[in-house]
Image 1 (spheres, helix red, strand yellow):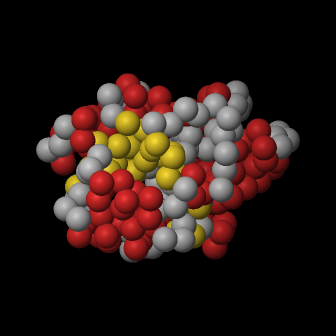
Image 2 (cartoon, helix red, strand yellow):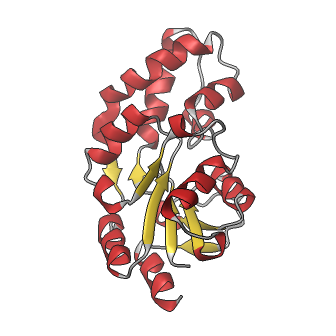
Length: 206
């Protein structure tokens, strides 16, 4: 494994609270009470899909409000410890790096570019770039095409079942970003990275 494609939320950036608390507040104002734990099960998939799965009434209106509302919780976002160091080391080793995320372009600019992460990636694929989001493989396939890499040499690093399903549908290995502190019981990753540095060790041994 020498090429790495990354999910963003819950993988490189701790953004769960920003998205879930803002959605919870919007729903509360509409008289809809959803526990945080239930909302968190939707974390990591496209916003529209999350609202549909939650059966939120008048979801287009909620979707329109959700993006801007996250700004109120922007101070809860942080890059996971060790991520930037590991990305820099992977680049030094000659690894090809990309991101494939359910984020829309404005969210990518707000969260990824502002944190200085964008400079590490040769390619980015955001929600507007593909017709079908995760768990479909479209985004990973497009990222590999743009990188000019093969599935056999590539791992998709993420943190949810949707990430795993997308990776396997694209015939790449799924690497679980275990450094985020969660331990989902529904994942069967090909490799678990307990720390970002573990990715560097994998690349060195490949």
